[in-house]
Amino acid sequence: MDAPDRRDAAPRSPERRDFLVATAGAAAAAALAGAHPSFRNASTASQEKKMPFTLPELPYAENALEPFIDQKTMNIHRTKHHQAYVDNLNKAVDGTPWAAMSIEEICRKAKDAPDAVKAAVRNNGGGHWNHSMFWKWMAPKGQGGAPGAELAAAIDKAFGSMDNFKAQFADAGMKRFGSGWAWLVRKADGSLAITSTPNQDNPLMEGLVDVVGHPLLGVDVWEHAYYLNYQNRRADYLKGFWEVVNWNAVK
Ligand code: MN3
Image 1 (spheres, helix red, strand yellow):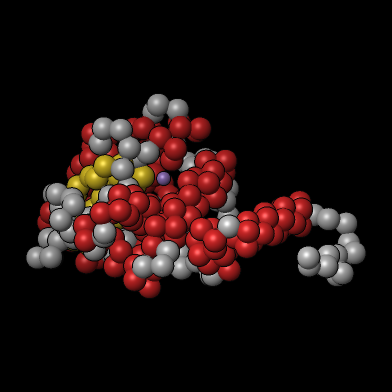
Image 2 (image 1 turned 120 degrees about the vertical axis):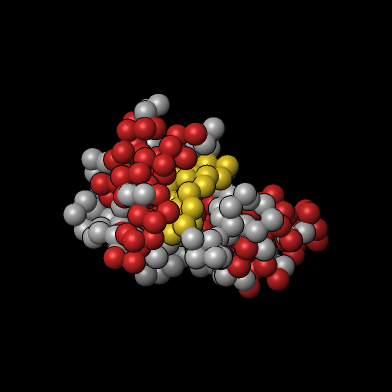
């Protein structure tokens, strides 16, 4: 058995306790692995190896988007929902060549994932990419800048005006039945389009979605993104979203 950490003379913080619990769990798993050959590969490998995908930090404080996105929603959304996508993606790709791919490449090639993990790669790979971008596509009110001249011109050309674009984008979010995302996409021919996807699909997923292209902006319309603050009022959430869009990241 390992000796206790002798540096641990200070009072124990909650984090320290969590670490000790996790360590005890790992020790139990290692003991199981030793006792039972069928556990050995799966459990010792995943306990010791650094996982390829990790939860990104927020580029602003958790409460910085209030009152449009409340702190509790941000906290649960990132540290529970997004973390689960990361963990489940790591599990799905463990021991496969997919573990070496970028998250964007995983989304582009999701349709080619082996059948046994295809749904897990699609849902959790999409979930990880979508949320990693979603955090960057928002900024505290007043810090998100304005659409660049080139983007503004492309939006005018495609949708008639910025107001029309915002209305059509929100409409795509409103009409997404159940859970999913609304997107502004630059297609391969350079034109802009608005689309929406179910679940954690995104416009990178060639062969799986209606409109394929480079996602310039996306908004999460799963209830977990707004229910604590807005309850059923998805339209109000989508209206508030414009107050915190980070136009500097829309590219
Ligand atoms: Mn979400």
